[in-house]
Amino acid sequence: MKQYIKSIVEINDNKKSRYFAFFIQALILVSIITFSIETIPNLKPETKTILQVIEWFSVIIFSLEYVLRIYVADSKPKFVFSFFGIIDLLAILPFYLSFGVDLRSLRALRFLRLFRILKLVRYNRAMNHFTSAIKSAKEEIFLFIFITLILIYFSAVGIYYFENEAQPEHFSSIFDSLWWAIITLTTVGYGDVYPITVGGKVFTFIILMIGLGIVAIPTGIISSALTKSVDKKHTTSEDN
Image (cartoon, rainbow, N blue to C red; front, top):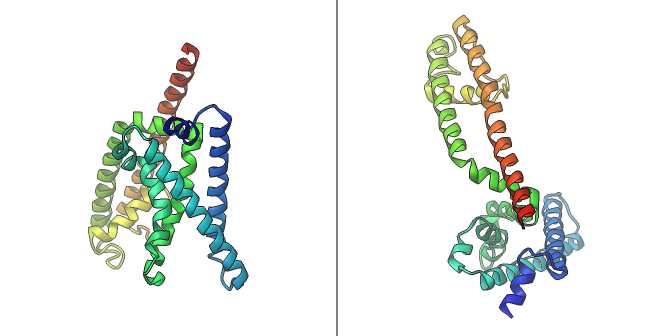
């Protein structure tokens, strides 16, 4: 029985597994749509009732799926604390937390229902390739994030010394300057804070050039890792 359930719950090439996967995917999409509809103001009581019934049904199915996945897992603790195990738990957690508690105090936790959309990753082969690519390039990505944080701090310090005297209201400290550094390095440039001194403008130009490179670096890292992941998958398939 355990092997039979495992052949259905986990992704396989048999029809029952595919039907189960399609059903869960459809239910996730319906759940996300109802989550969005709930934010519409002045909904009719009948509509709220329908949405509540859909939510109850979704939670029951997702809970059953979660229990079954734990049941068929080779290592139950490993699944529970895995990425998908945590996502599956977060998808149903807000519903159970609402029992016997003032819902207004838990309103902020409702956003956790949005984690249900991440459950779709399990059923998407392209996303699986992307996940594998992220894992294989995690050291390079962590190094990039570390360097980026250093550059942000360096930018904040630099613009502080250039603009502090001219604009003390915007660049009163290095901490206030961090906002300018973030939006400049990411090339967003909201325009709410900008340099007015010659030195600040030149420094901003340099930071913008560095920012353009920073935006491109992670794209190259992930693209390279994704290509390797797809090639490895194809090679394995051909060998089999």
